[in-house]
Amino acid sequence: MICVRCSKDLRPPGIHTCCPADKQHLLHVDAPHFHAGAIFFNDTCIEAAPILRWCEGKSYREIAQYAKRKRWSLRVTRIQ
Ligand SMILES: [Zn+2]
Image (tube, protein in one colour):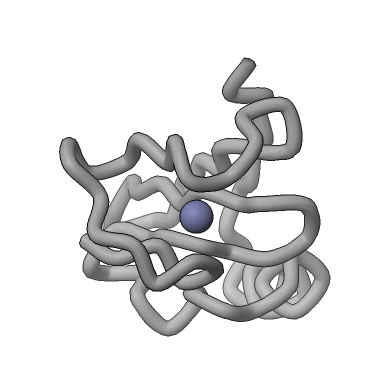
C-alpha cells in the first residue's frame, strides 16, 4: 500500500505516519453489496480498500456525490 499523498510505502497498511494523524479521517462505506473503508487526509482520499481504489486522490465531495447516486451510506470517523 502506498500513501497517495506522500508516495510512501505503508507498513503496516492503513497507518499513515507520513501524514499528520489529526488531519486524517476514516470513511466507512456501507453499500448494498459491500462494506469497505478509505482513509482521508483533509479532503483527499489517500488510501482505499481495493473495491474503492478509484477513490484514491479524489475529494470527499466527489465520492459523496457518487455515493448519493448509488444510495451508499457513508460514515466518517476521526482517526485520532
Ligand atoms: Zn502520507
